[in-house]
Length: 587
Image (cartoon, rainbow, N blue to C red; front, side, top):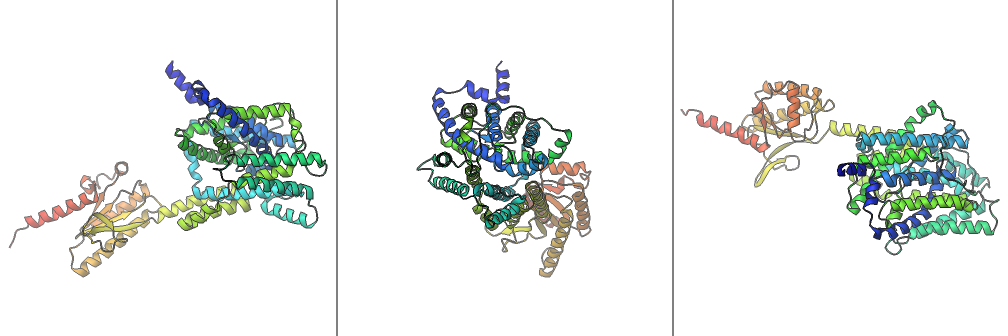
């Protein structure tokens, strides 16, 4: 029975938390849920509109995933919901297909969420959490900075009350500029939008240690003040407003879909799944590290997938962990998933009891909320540090940024991932390689490029190649060793030193070997043997030795050609030389 319960807790972690719930956590979870709700409602509606969807779908996409994740998600306080990292992809994928039909847009968004969820759920079952490694730090830095700008630019028309009919960030900027020049600015909408933006930013500048809830308070103050101003001055006919929410609970909205829609959305679904999980696991790991908890990546992937499936089936759209709302729950004292359940329940109460409260909420204010949330993704400092640390990584970040901003989110991320593979191949193609030697008074064998005073062991050349050997660099390895041997032979001949008889390859960095590289190794061994030089491998890993055996090379590279360490190889060689000298009869 205990084993069955343990299995249930693995599949539904929330039940395990509920069974061991400490009553002392209750007030903290309830309070955190109330505080969180104040952010969930405006941010959810804002990101729905930023995704080209009706505002109420942002609430559906918050309620259902929060409730489902509370049971199947492994992290205790992770907050799921609409996110700025996904909004541009949803906008690009759904709006053109919907062709102005709001109900079709909702259905397509739901289908996309289900497809994303299925990919993530199967990925979790198949233990594919490692795929997020495709989004390296440089790529994430570039695309997150670009996404932040894309989201902020997309909200400029709503913020200023300018009607813009243009695609892409540059088109939207040009459209806003043309609208301002043509006198299309709605002064009151711009005043409400810019004023709300200023209020939120002022509160964001308050140090966390002085006022932990300042960010939440700023959003509440901005939204409440804008609604009051709109009501008092009767501005609902002058400025665009969100309007009343539909009264009711999340419900299926997948009508009118066709099989062809699945094919069209396959690419965006894969991209959304990759980005959503990358963001989720990053936040989840940071939380678990701070709280001393253990969260499995594959379980996190499956939980996020199930939450997306449920949200898509009930009128929502793809979601991920929120980098802005999760800290709100944490700072408010959240202890368990009950915080998310309380937040979802309060949104339900809002939609059932006061759906008309948003009737006087200006769209410009939601735009301000989205812009300030997107600001959290801007990290110019990290980008500058990349240029200082590694130019290749900085170029990758720049490529991701430019691709996402100027070409498109999906295309930009695809380009950056492709360039990352190219960079990997280039680095493996031309890795660091050097000769090792002895230094007076220091143990071991040292890089002669870094330590010019290191001396070559008489009769022995020790080389190190810092990469796996495969088809890309096998030829380079062969050529480099030959050049190093020829140079050593010339130097020995010119100085009257002992002739070169052994090449020791410090092989610890060689973690793999393919058939192309194996052929290069055989060719090199033949070339060395023709010059009376023996190739010896030092510190070659067991799996690589197994590979040589599988390739049928164990007859060529016999046991005496391998040494556990460079020092052992040198000792064995010099020992044989001393034995030969001692056994040579004197005349």
